[in-house]
Image 1 (cartoon, rainbow, N blue to C red):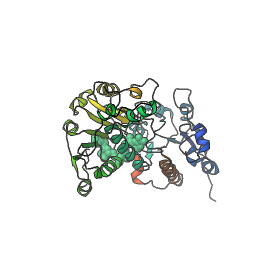
Image 2 (cartoon, rainbow, N blue to C red):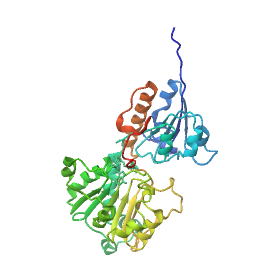
Image 3 (cartoon, helix red, strand yellow):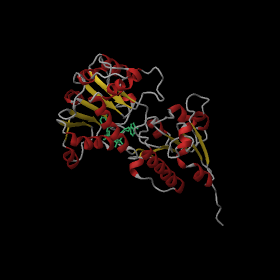
Image 4 (spheres, rainbow, N blue to C red):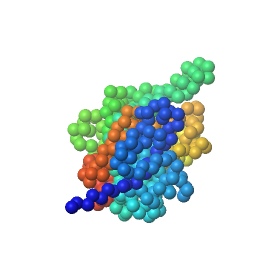
Length: 366
Ligand code: NAD
């Protein structure tokens, strides 16, 4: 006789609250209210499913439930920061799933030490972000935000805007990181007839891929930024990229360059960027990622401006959470869980940390 042992897993999800919007728009799947569309399915399998947005401090739902959780689902948009200390307490934890792309809110080295797997839904929102990058480059270079604000104010002074507006054609644009997003940015920029497209990445693009977008690799970071009119950051946050764009590196930027960062806030030094924008060394900074999320109300990046009163293209973290992206990362999260419950192998491209350690080179050369 075979004994049937029904395993009940506790699955904990830390998501952002959608409030009224999530009730009105069920495609807002990444919210606590719509719970990635997983609730009925997980309950039908008999698993316990705890969903909350409460993630900070020892009394938070996140810290209370992590002690029992076998599976943790988080999202980069409202990151539940899984520190080494919390790993020590998460005795039952086997799997962390990032609903989206970017797992730096999890201490990945601690995950390796505790033999906890970390998976992402790789590729799920890379086009969403690449489109946002191209939009941000254009809105900075063309001085769009102050132009629109002027119109809302009821004013009309064309030269106040035009004095700081340029064409992207003929400029040098470079990406730090030429992976899924960085490469898509290069592809989308090709028809803009930039002077040159550059990339900085420790992995060279395959020859045909580099040729297809006409991008040149520059191997020294200072040399790379000194050639760019526009720099876009598209690498993961890890030990080698935290604070990469700091005061010293900014000194190598061309005076009046534009910087777009939709990768992770902590890759750029908050104060150094604010200072460089204020003194005009950077003409503009745009992105959707912040060193702490949600960003405090007084975060310098909310209101920083260049000497002409523009150059700020900051928004909340949403480039990778369009409704199209949410459908993809919700489906991808379910498929990772299905594989896990069935004891099936996971899609290799989704594995950041596997049972034997890091399975990707994207989070640093090791
Ligand atoms: P990817 O793994 O396909 O590509 C990352 C690339 O960065 C790789 O080619 C890797 O070699 C390179 N890289 C790593 N360290 C580097 C370094 N020190 N210098 C230069 N290059 C380096 O990842 P992806 O899908 O392109 O995503 C990149 C990052 O974008 C994610 O890790 C995440 O942080 C961010 N992201 C943001 C959003 C958003 O909504 N804003 C959404 C998705 C991803």
